[in-house]
Length: 293
Image 1 (tube, helix red, strand yellow):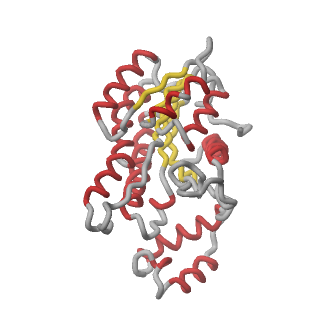
Image 2 (cartoon, helix red, strand yellow; image 1 turned 90 degrees about the horizontal axis):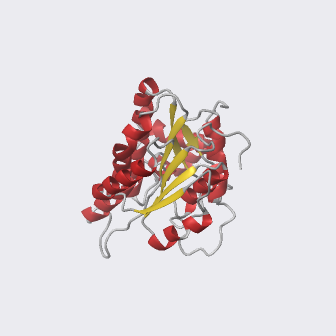
Image 3 (tube, helix red, strand yellow; image 1 turned 120 degrees about the vertical axis):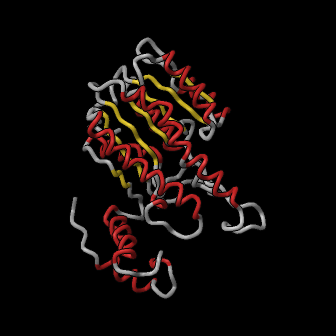
């Protein structure tokens, strides 16, 4: 675990985490539990969720509560909100909205022929976040003194926008925008609340592993992502752009700079992946000068 932690990770504070039964959500729950925080763990996987009370048993100084939820459904959020406020009237100190999914178009259809592919993706990956914010924003902002934090899990695909899965990319691009506006609004009204956009690199999780039975050398573990995240939170970073074992922070910044340069320099969209631009893009990315942070 990181040696320096954001002050929200403290004994007696309360953390609510969606997508908590696996991957990055589970790794974050482990960090919170190590600091003796109260845990409110939400997931749609009933079997995995049932194991969390055993992995994180309640004690005299911290409690663990689990809730099965479909984050796309407002009625599920209403139910969870009522139960959580009854259990923790002092409020939620750490709100981590992390649940996500990657849907595919129906068999025989392209991404542009299946509107349900877009609807299902946005229902979970975007509205699952705005639903969670709406359910708990009053609870989180009611305290204007103690350090609190909100983490939204985005994706590099929502920034660099690689071809192949436009609904996922668009849903995560929306999360980036939502996080930026939330940070801007709370900066004035609740300076005790920090907002963070977590942007994992290649991470070996249930969502990304596919048919792989073991972690590829290039991928990070969820624990590595959370260690990196907690260090950046302690440093006051909003954009937490995680590297992995294949891609450095510097290369990520070069790729992002090139991608936004398509707009500035009048290049065709997604030039980095176009056959007629691929070689020029590779040379351009290599030659960019990125100032150290």
